[in-house]
Image (cartoon, rainbow, N blue to C red):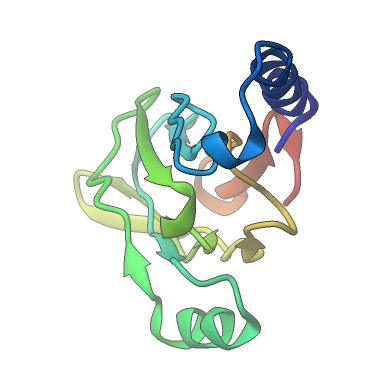
Length: 158
């Protein structure tokens, strides 16, 4: 949770308490603030060629899940083949995204794959990202320099 969301939540709670609501009454209320209970994942092809991203994820953030996802891939986002400059976005409920990483994305031309990016580090919920965050996988470079830059809320983490 980032600072802005924490201040907003605290302000709302203080308003409700000041208006006479008890904490017992608040327990049964489930407030869904868009963006507050979700995680956005953006995939950006910032290269001159087509990119087939291979973004893997799991709903559990434990080390066993990371181990299994690293070996067997976990679930994969269906981003398809991205054109140069194309951006796709996915939204997850917080409980549905425990870990995420890029696994050997391919750069292609009309003849097929000519470059493969190294896998990124595995990002884990509550360690590397949290609810309300935006995770960006930006594919850069061409051929031998092809790779992925991963950022959370605009801050590069890998």
